[in-house]
Amino acid sequence: MAPTKFTVKLNNKGDLTMANRKLGMGDNFVKFAYENANGTTGVSAVVHLTGTITSASIRQSLVLLQSRHPLLRASFSPSGDSLEIDEHTFPLPLDIVARNDPEQWKHVYRQHLNQAFALKEGYLWRATYLTGENINEQEHELIVSFHHCVIDGLSIGIFYRDLLNYARIILEGGRPEVKKLPLLPNTEAMLKKHVTWEHYKAGSESGFTELLKIIDQLYSYEKDAPLMERTTEFFVMESNENELLQMLNKVRKNDSTLTSLLSAALLIAVYRVKGGMNSNGRIQVANTPVNMRNNCLPPIGLDNIGPYVSMISTFHYTDLATSVWDLARSFKESSIKAIEEQSYGPRDINKLEYLQMLSRLNEGPFADKYVLGVGVTNYGVIDLPADYGLFQINKFYSGASRHGGDWLTLLHTATFDNKLTYCFCYEEPLLSSENAGKIIEEFFGILFNC
Image (cartoon, rainbow, N blue to C red):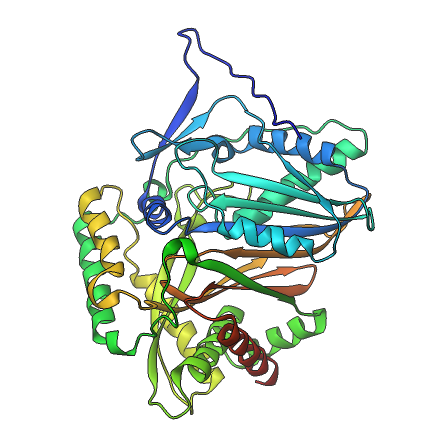
């Protein structure tokens, strides 16, 4: 199909009109990782739809969505230290794919996870719509992918919420009312807590020293491969409503949280598969995203799309005798402490020193190692109605790529329609599909039998 034609609007000087937003610490991190690891830090999500919805309504909704959310009109500046936001919407081309197989979406989703953005041109997201032709015409999938500089996991729910609400109104013959949102500064510029560059650097050096203490315990790649030969693979699953309720009851009874239970189960599963049944215990590193919206001044509400997260790292000892609930409680306590002591990004940084700090993770003793054991991102309850009248959402999955090989396995979860959805991501051949499958099998065995 022919590409969408863009209409370019100029100001009275003949130049494109646009706003500018400096990159923050988190933005610089994911941009560095992306540029140095062949598309690492891309985030992709898919919703499965049934009912009457058209590609035309999706196209129109995407244009409205870009008008509402400024970061959906963002690209990197030539200098690379800021985002440039077009004042006027250039419609994003929508890929339309004929849906000939119920499992076809998995192939497209894998492509999304592994396809890097052209960072020097165009917007930092893409969309593909699979719609039935030769099979059930009431079945559809909408897949979107983003550079992490413009979105976080919670924002993906906001993206789909707004887009599908616009589509519903259009299909019902109405005209959606679109309120344009202002461009917010980078997250660090809005944080209540002010951190100096020296304070942040001291905290980073401390974390680096802690990693060096356990360097001999970090898991090595199963098979190293050039970046271009690494592929993000994924496994998806969803619970039923009863399973989620049972888990929530268990975590309350055991003074834990759902995220800490998921993290503990995954840490133990990794140890059982990768640690060796006859080996000594291991100290594993877990990374957990922290929602920073309420730590900003003013707080960032649930209207805005953006990358409003930070990360905490916690260290956990695992052996054959480790109890999942002891580890979950320990994870909860250490996470609370880490959040309280976290050295969030400063407003002013030494960019050269910062890039040097980041680059050390692929050099020296950390080369060919998984620096982070596991990461669990629990989006919580995704604010999406399941029923939109003429169409419904059946499933929601979201995942991310980490070609750099710093993570052993990533788990993204979300609660949608009273069910918990899981999306495990890992890098092949750094971690083989065989062992990834064993880890996932162990994980569910631990989770459902604890």
